[in-house]
Length: 395
Image (spheres, rainbow, N blue to C red):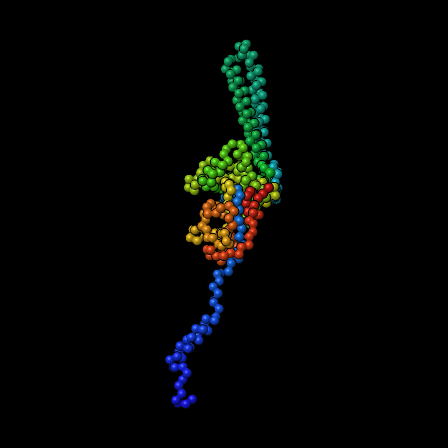
């Protein structure tokens, strides 16, 4: 290009041309898509359970024999024989121990001898009275002689009565040398072995026999629970019959005793220090599995909530004493809902307020949810899980 040639575009036009090209290029691009929402959260949901629900209470107690009898030595002597095996069942009137009875046999023989002497004296006094009576009537003897004869007869009769009592006492003492079980039950360990001196100064404890079928459990209930129970069951025969067999027993390993129990004893007064009332419940124990002194957990229904709304505990979130659940709302979104839980029954809460029959709650995946989050629920049914809670599980 020669020096005299002029540029086609003026220098200032280069900037405008470049801007026009950029704008034209930008106008040819497609519009950006709108921002996508969060993906649905996969959860497991279920309709709330509605059923008449017994409300159970549990208390800790300890087992004891329905009869616990201490076997003691009632006379002093050397223990000759132990007739039973420790920890084994024994029958009523079965011999348990024998104490050396020779001193007691000698004492009985002596008492019997004294009785024979006094009986002979009484016989002689009666003959004297019978002989002197007609003589006094005929004034052949003085009144004093006849009165002396009568007094001797009465004295001899009293001596015979005393001697007979001594014989009876000696027989009783001799009987105490044979120690038998007063009940059918389970014998404990023997506290004294053969050859030991027992009964000196005090009645020596030899062993304890317990009747363990039925087995008893003692525990204390609060005054409020007692009043609720009393108002529901009352005192009439029909109410007491309906309350039979409502108690369940759980052992230390968590297993349930296969037989239900009934109240046999309630203390006469409420403990003023603890505000509790002592109860005793008897449970059949034909297998002899439960022994006295075991840990026991007793459960029984205190009341029944009609048309109770139940949800699993795993569906309920607690934060600073505020309880909440997530409900599957219309449109498949998570609705945050505050609820008021009532008693716990098994793995469920009875919801007092905040849920209605027919609503569906999230039971798995709650931790991933936020209010109004879209849901991808998989629905299940809790009826089978809640059915055992409706009534005592034992037949």
